[in-house]
Amino acid sequence: GCCRERRWRMEAPAAPNKPAPMLASRYSAASLGGKLIREAIRIRHLKQILMRNLQGKDIVGPVDCYYTLLEVGNKDESDSASMEEEIFRSKIESRTLNPSWSTIENCTPKRATATWMILRVYTRASKTQDWRLHLEKNFHLRDLEYFQPIRRAGLGDLGKSGPNTVYLVLIDGVYGFPNDLTAPANRKPMRKRGPLKITVSALLQQHAQLSSSVEQYLARLKLRGSLENQCNEILKGADAKIYRARQVQASLTALKKVHMEKKEEKEELSAQLELISTHRKELKPRAELVLKMCKEMRRKREALEKVAAMSTALQKKRLTAETRVYLRQLRMLSILYAVYPVIKRGAGARAHAATTTLAASSSHTASSNASDFKSTTSAASSNNGNYSSTYRKPPFYTIRGVTLPDLPKDSMAKEISVALGYCAHLILLAAKYLGVILRYKIVHLGSKSYVVDGVHDPPQQVPLHFKESAATSRGVIQKGVAMLIIDTRQLLSACSIKQPEETYGAGTFLLHQLYVLQSQIVTQSK
Image 1 (cartoon, rainbow, N blue to C red):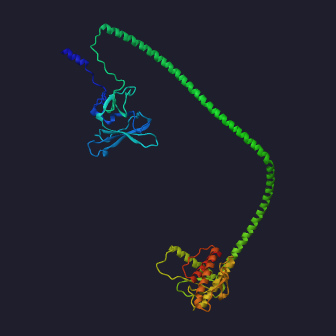
Image 2 (image 1 turned 90 degrees about the vertical axis):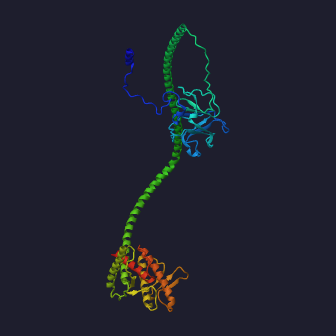
Image 3 (image 1 turned 45 degrees about the vertical axis):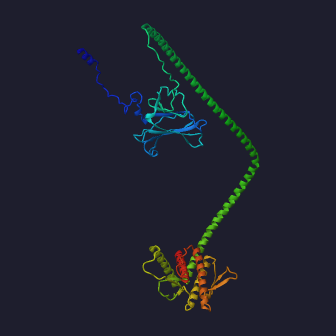
């Protein structure tokens, strides 16, 4: 007993210096090196799906195909379609009847309890046709049947497969459906043998034979290794020579192409040189003519430069003359508006007496009109176009102290005819000084002036004064005032003055236009 205890103590293993290796999660026979237990098969153990002998009514030759894997939560439920979820879709295998799809990666189930699976295979004869469902199988992972192990060289011979046979490759071997599997071709039935009858001498002879055969096999392996090394070196040298020869051949073909291109370019250049020589011979007389024309053009250019210098001098003189004419026009217009002053009066005020002298009235009216126009524009800009809170009556205007009412009255016949005579004379002289041809011709006859419309045939005369019947004269006078308003608009556009808005009556608006024209010309003359 003591010896046994000592021996046990001597043979006992020492304590480990490193931690023990980690085992696979969910301990199974596959993680320990054996086969999977049927109840322990899960979706993560599935690595690849194969199919052999695709057959069907629509399949005549090789087709394109792919498959989808769906998981089902519980087969016993009534609404099984709602529980189906696709967990993997394979790539398309083209033009084949024995598809071997690529390995399954990232195939994780969405439910922990899902063990029922649906496999659907889709096919199409060509790219122009639609996909069709070729095969559908509902199965449980524990119902799969083990077929054969996975060998180092590959799956090996699967044997004779029936039509539409599906193989599922798991981590421990090849599985299939029970109805589809047949015995593989390389399986042979075991022979029954009787009891072994062997002696020691026979065993020694066999051992000697085996040792000699092993030595011969090892020698052959050494020779084979040396020969393989020599062959590999020879093949490497041959591959290098072939690669160099191909490079040389490729460079030669490239040089030939370049030579042909250069040859074609040379031919094209020779043809172009011939054309250039022929054109050169043809263009010699034309070149002489061009040289003569260039000399003539130089002479003409010199003459044109002299003419241009003269024209610039004349233009300067003309500009000075035009400026003088413009200044003269401004002076004449300022004198004219001194003769016929248009004054803006306040609301409710009466016309005061006419000015005593022309000199005093000219300076007073020019300054008052300019100040009134500035005050009106500043008031409009300060109010931003809005009316003030207090109501004000519209202003009225006078020409040489005479008012022009909007509606002609019989009691003011003389004042209206005199005012219209003043307006007509003022517009006629301003058009003459500015060189403007009026739309309606004005015939000035003092207080009995009239306007002529030359468009009609015969020309129509519109009087600017009252005649015998006052009722008919009102409409005629209003028409004449409208014609004078159109003529004043021509004068405003000729002086590049903005057209005022027609916010008053006809008579007041006519005097308002003349007031704006007078104030602008006075400011320009200053």
